[in-house]
Amino acid sequence: MNDVISSLEGRLVVSCQALSDEPLFSSFIMGRMALAAQMGGAGGIRANTVVDIEEIKRNVDLPVIGIIKRVYPDSDVYITPTMKEVRELMSVRPEIIALDATDRPRPGSTTLDGLYHEIRKEYPDQLLMADCSTYEEAMHADSLGFDFIGTTMVGYTAESRDMRIDADDFAILRRILRDAGHRVICEGNIDTPAKARRVLELGAFCVVVGGAITRPQNITRRFVEEIER
Image 1 (cartoon, rainbow, N blue to C red):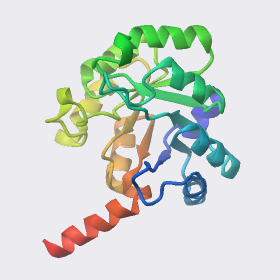
Image 2 (image 1 turned 120 degrees about the vertical axis):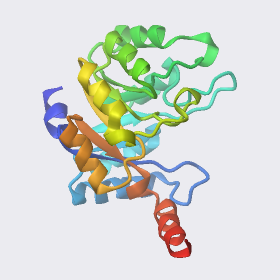
Image 3 (image 1 turned 180 degrees about the vertical axis):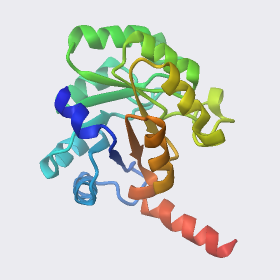
């Protein structure tokens, strides 16, 4: 754990992900994207799926925050939603496993508390990150004992649809940092270097940036929209 902490603390984590309908969808490309991130100075990688993580680990020696995105028909929770995904991830042993910790119905009427305790029983030494969307969710995840509390889902759930992570100088982050007992990872809509620097100044353990670095279609769109405005 100490090696992971020292590698990530105060650093940039680059989210190297591409879904099946995106132009960079390829484990090979994600491995090269992770290598580019390492060459640029990133301290860690966040990645989706076993095959992508395998390829990324062949290319870089950075700690990985691993997830599996999977949709279930009875739930809106899709980031490492069940024990099935956790067990799949453990086949490649990412240093941290992140899972949705929002207060939404989970697949099969399971609960976050039940999943958390099942993971701890089966994999007691695995580091876990809670992807939260509200202050209340973050405090609940903190009380459960997640090693890292993430702001990943702020603005992406019905409960947080009117929130922005950077509103009022990152007010929700500052509130979580004030009250959480575990390390807080800032993630979600951190789309400029200045924002990344600011959340670290405020006390975030590390910062995760995805689309602003690794989704060229999104980067291109920002330029085009500014040109056409």
